Length: 555
Image 1 (cartoon, rainbow, N blue to C red):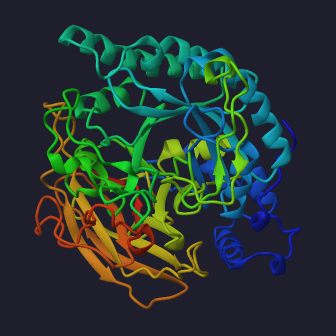
Image 2 (tube, rainbow, N blue to C red):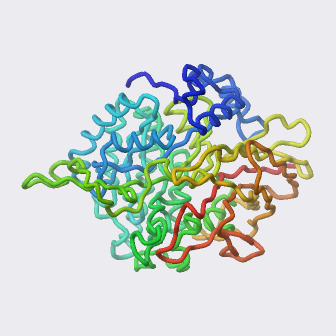
């Protein structure tokens, strides 16, 4: 692998005058975190110190810089996409991404030919884009369920791992799909998905690969990812199966006048089927402010998993196959050839005429921000595993820093994904440092954050009903109006400690569209809401979400 260069905004050799407004903002945030230049390239002393004290046991989390990425990007190595690696990498750089995962669909042609050819292009893309972190991944068809992103740290076996996994565990290749008939087949398929995750964990444990992660994609799109399946994947290897898309790709699917009168953001245009889990209501098959119902419902499925006291992260991404208003179309096949004989599609051809599509380019609309102490592939994977993650749409924020600390002698405290051990009656402060958007987004809009919501839920431990999707003690406990505030500012929220352990997480929006939450106004009085079919302009309805911070009450 060629030597990795720092992103331009993190490289002191690049003059501030050469940066755009967002680059200047990110450099300022990075300097404030004490991570810049050589300190960022090599890693600071904070990381080993944090490991020594132990996250979640009274120690302090390190200072972090946030890298922006997308774990769900497709290329000509997916049967239903169209772009080359170079096109995707250039777009990602244009929209400020630091890392990305080429996440190609499992397919017989991909397993037989494409994965190896793709790896050659991955190596070439890394050499051509030394300021980006480019991962090779696979979009796994989960036996009996939806899709997942699977990706490994770069190394001699990254492509081999993905190919072996695809052949042995992919539901599509094995015929272990959600359409299998009979309870026996369903049980077999669900068990095979658990075996798959355990197999990945073993490859990491034995050192076959340095690291590997799994994230569930568009979990409620078809309603076939049941709560008990998601818990089973998590429990099989929580260090590997770390979370799910809180918001799917295809965010341009319902742009007015574009795809049709029935279009929904995220392409969540399905109804319950015979394969869907019967416990989901019909409203679960929609997006809310562009977010999956499992995430957008305060007190819903995501919260029910967090209320067990275990981290399960959320992300957002482009799922880029075909960009809205783009003018490229798929190239033509030579006579007698197809995807299964080649393992890839022909290169696309420019038509100068807008082509059908639902997606945005990587980083154009959806962004996942991952907190790291140094720059590199394994640092991104560690940040994801630790849950140091927040996400935004439409470039709503330049920066977000969250710390929960004791009121007296709290030091830096803990951040997203972390745990703070306290005693009943202790006084805590939740510090939320926001850096407002400093430039117009790719749509030409200067985003303005209108409010910040603090959501709190009790931690009650493992559920007896593995299909539970309600967290009845989770609700919005505070909303702060930040309309008109600019630059970097800090909100300080007092947090009371009672008898029970709990978690807090954050959410906010541009304030353009909200209403009563799915579980009622007493739980969420100004929640994201669905749009009318065919009329879902995503740029006019943007939100940010953060991962939780846990508080363990002892004594």
